[in-house]
Image 1 (cartoon, chains in turn purple, cyan, green):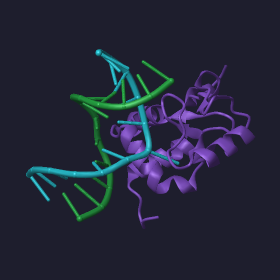
Image 2 (image 1 turned 45 degrees about the vertical axis):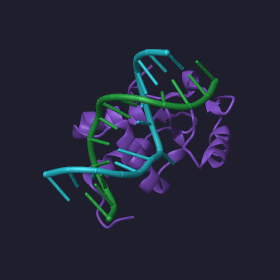
Image 3 (image 1 turned 60 degrees about the vertical axis):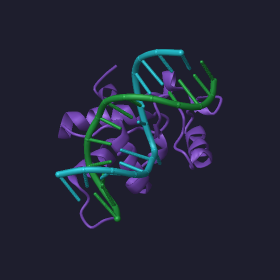
Image 4 (image 1 turned 135 degrees about the vertical axis):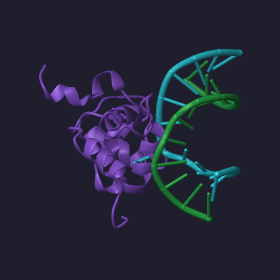
Length: 108
DNA sequence: ACTATGACCAGCG
DNA sequence: ACGCTGGCCATAG
């Protein structure tokens, strides 16, 4: 971990850290939320940040837009998500039920 | 300043 | 469902 992460990195980690157990967000969704706050970034950039600093947050709760898990960490991610009760459809996460958006915290 | 490289994504065949 | 293409934008050399 670098001495002083850029503001962007902090924002990304902050959003990921807020994802509740048993739910997931896609890189694109995280990107959108962070973009609202910092005005910059993209899904791809979020992926780059996760690859570097993901170890400090629940990285397994961030998946690709089609439910695929992060390359090289499929096994570990599947194990953790399954343990949290996330539903799968084959090797992919069942996004229809697991997808989470920060607004859900506000009310139902 | 420029080029190359990604834990991405939507569109198209 | 699968592979390719073009767009995306911060990082690294």
